[in-house]
Length: 93
Image (tube, one colour):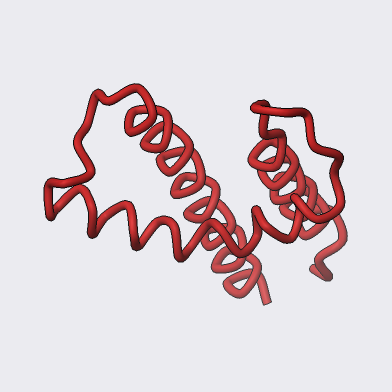
């Protein structure tokens, strides 16, 4: 059972890492530091968009709109951290 716990924690860690990369990459795109007309950049951003946006959209439905400030990545990241902590604490040993 501990190997299953390790696998779940690694999956959560990987998703948190992808979420952080997606947040930084969207900032870089918005400030025109990287160019989305580059085919490699576009394909990487499309893959990260498909991975991250479903969870972000789920959270965006329930938190209020603060204009241009998007708090959904913070909520998703903290939620993943909380789930990881719960798994570690309450997993049967």
